[in-house]
Length: 505
Image 1 (spheres, rainbow, N blue to C red):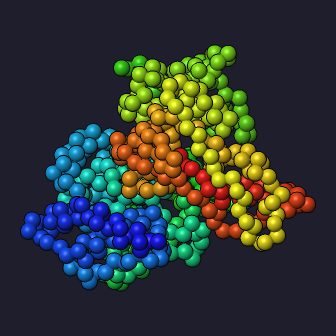
Image 2 (tube, rainbow, N blue to C red; image 1 turned 180 degrees about the vertical axis):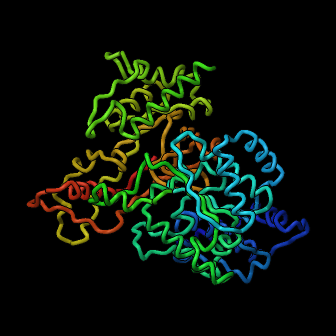
Image 3 (cartoon, one colour; image 1 turned 60 degrees about the vertical axis):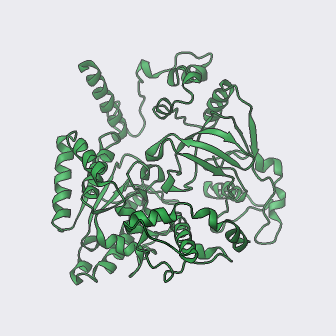
């Protein structure tokens, strides 16, 4: 099947390949054979698959790129890392640098000195949300890239990666195992690979949202970089991260690594250890209040439980129709601004429970005067891997009624103009990750067309196809005579439902 699809469509994939190669090689008279054009198309497909953790060889029947046939090919990762407009980046750098704070300037200077003098070093930029960490990343990226140097920008989450120019997730870039252990290494960092050449040439590595992953992820990168960098200098095997300049950033008040059945000490052990005037005053007091809550000192000394008094302006006084009031305050004049990306990306409603989320969604959807389309999940029970037939004891109606974190509802109602959020990393290179917000512009039977509202790809039009989710690993599915005694076992039952095909929007 893959071979037949390729034979019928490969010519459609070649529209801009010749133009791009002429631009890259600065040779407007360049001519490529059909074989070379096909190989460049396969290289592009392979690069897209690698970004999302897959390989072309996994698809049986598809031809594989022949590097000997693409005589003009160079390391695509290095080419992408260098394909920036240096003039515009230089101008952006000047603008950003003129706006940095004193603390940001100190960090900037320290990192620049270490990188420009090839001194190596590991830095951690600690700051809570809104203190300008992303602004600092942009300034550093613009500075180095405007000089023709390489910056490897990654983040622990997909949505954070889209905020950094050229950013991708750490796991997809380095090939870090999901079930990381103290013996793990980065599977994609191998001697002689394209990624290894990219890292060797990189002046700087930025890793945002660093407190989120397990510390074994950083140890895996440390071991892998030491292994490949010692080729340049045997002493690199004895210094952190092979002598590269690595900058971590994040906020320990936010999400820390998740340790299955772990206590507080286990979470700490798994974490990366880090070493108008009236309006301004109002913002300062509000920030201090949020920090006191985050530090656990709001309301005075306590043993973990305390009653907090919320400011009156944060409360919804209308108890008759609180959902309507919440939407009206957050999205005033919504229908008139429905297609205004700036208006939509500056607003969001966060809710503590799925029930409130559904109430808000239903109310907002009712305001949009468009035809509604309903999408349903697959409602066929997957065969039991053990062959015991235990799955037959759970009815279709029960499976369709399951509502839990990370699993879309069985029924999804959408309209053109509805705002949606992705729940899975689909394609970080196009800004499609967990947390990306979009607005629906067309509804198909199996494909939905949307416009990205957030991140560095805002304004892009993308297609979200129906996805099939499969359960990774093994899960003990309870029999009818078994009792689910622990939360972990209950979670396993709910996670089993992830093997159903879903439309993830």
